[in-house]
Image (cartoon, rainbow, N blue to C red; front, side):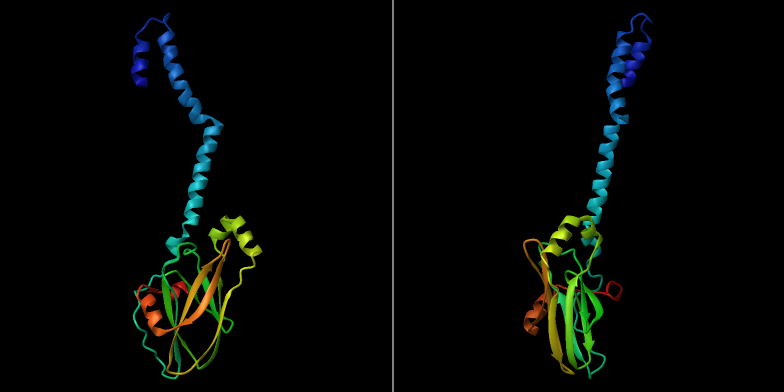
Length: 207
């Protein structure tokens, strides 16, 4: 439309500048809006907002990469087999990852909808699970401060295991008003198998 106006204006007499002026009047607001500092600021805000959304959408990176559940064949009959898993079904906070320590050593991250088998020597297992600090939490600094103020405690469980036996430990983040409290619970084989059927293996690279 602007090219048509420019062409018609160029064919008129030099003394009749009104159409050309009208064309400039139509083009000027667009040019000013494009180069105006406020317009540039708005574009910058949209860009920053898009980056923030990408950071907050970290759940795409926190899914187990392995195959769906299949029974693990224990390599040493002198050890116990423990399945650790975090079942599907969390409506909030599912993008968070939690670490699992056994006897003060990290053995894996616990991802939403993930599981992993653990072969343990007979004896006592002292387990601790807590949230990993992530980019998402650094972006949402206010939420992180509120959670710290609520003094959310890590999940803990002590379990004595025997050689040749199989155990099932479920980790579930219990949602609070401002925080999540990870819960470690020993569950029955029947209960665990129903939930494990929907879980995928947490690979070594994700641990």
